Length: 129
Image (cartoon, rainbow, N blue to C red; front, top):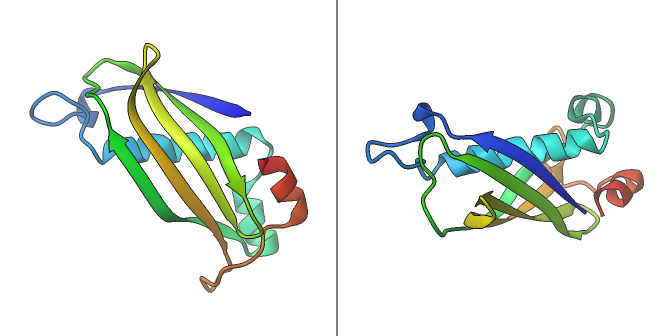
């Protein structure tokens, strides 16, 4: 199962050369992850409030394959690679007209309010597969 999130490149997303500033891809994929989780019916605010669980990026591997520019329409595709007791590994690709311009593998961990690793509730693990 994969989730697709559209991103339009605005002038503010670009650098002096007119291409998307490299760090903005991280913002794009973060927004896509938020919408992916929301689309599954997971309320992250309630998860924190009721269970004391938040997600944090533990590891990120990224490749910049081509440049996106002002006014491009991009798609961030998010898919699950692996879900364990306390970790989620996602593949996130940013494409333009079907061409991958940025690819990443993101490892998320579940943390308690105090920053300690915790297990994901079983119902969440099932939803994330």
